Amino acid sequence: MLHKALSAVPGVEMHHEYMVHLVQPLGVRRTMGLADGEAARKLLSATHLAAVRYCEKPFWGDSSNKLSWLIGDLAALFPEAKFVHLVRDGRKVAGSFFNKLADECYDDRSTQVLRAHVEDPVHNPAPPPEKKYWWPLPRPGDPAAEAFRSFSQFERIAWHWAEINRVILESLAALPGRSLFLRLEELRASPTAARSLYEFLGLAFREEYFAMFARPHNVNRPEDKLLDEVQRSRFERIANPMMERLGYSSRPEYVVNY
Image (tube, rainbow, N blue to C red; front, side, top):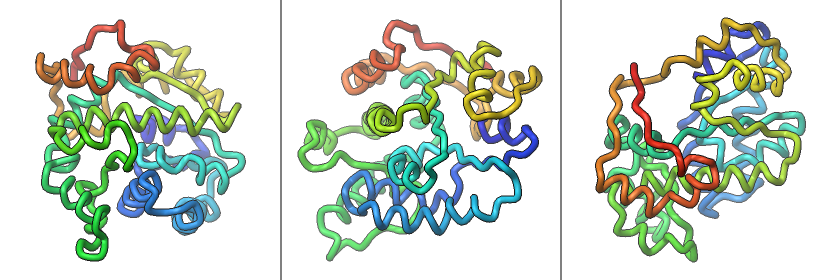
């Protein structure tokens, strides 16, 4: 959605998950302590920094949750960069990931492959840079680490939603004045919210841009399912503190009409 909406603005080169086959493994290794800042900035310099350097337009952007784990490194490389923290009701995210990404996101085998590599990299080399293998696991000492070992795929996805937002909030708190927080639901409902996005980025807003937020984008299966009772109970147990923190806990789950 952001890729399409911002690409419509003259002078903007906008991407969705730029160089994801490199960035996603890097983000996982970075957040799990398997890569340091120097290594992260070296790879980001060869991808994002190089892309910005040779971009022929005044604005360059990337919409990617994979960058959430690399905010500090990006801020260091791009001192003028701005960050948009766009959130969505975690129930909708978890349900969408679980039903639509299938074996591309936290499936049992791929999760075990990554765990085996993390715990014994000598005998278990790193998996290839396919999306399905590179989703973060709790680090040793994390209160969720032990429980995570017995989580189902849906529970792992619920943990991911809460954890990625925790990391984003903490990372952006260290960058005052450089970020904007938006809820997807409000962005789709209000031209005022859409205008605030463009103004924050220093882009001219046109009323016709708002229509681009009215329908879902990048949907490989245009269907929506509410969480069942078991899923809802498990999601609340894992992610309710973050739901409260982001202002969703008092809101009913909604249905998306495609």
